[in-house]
Image 1 (cartoon, helix red, strand yellow):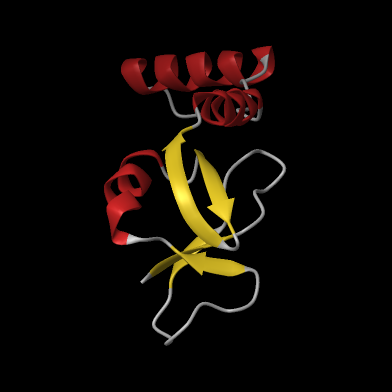
Image 2: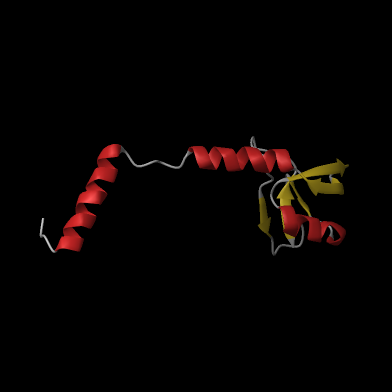
Length: 100
């Protein structure tokens, strides 16, 4: 069964895992079958409604997804000018048969 934490992470995503036990551990809840297609399509960025520890609604959370995608893009390291110059030198050396 797929289970999720009752509390979303700071980025709005829900910690989740496939669980083979009889019942979810404390702080987690099983995803009911009626929400499995929503979960599979949008996981882990969903907005979930709970009543007494039971999932009562689940919809896409595009705000959380966009925020995470922007954070991921910001972590991409861009090459420096020195990196680009070295790549150009290496390319030219290979193309002209020069050994560096």
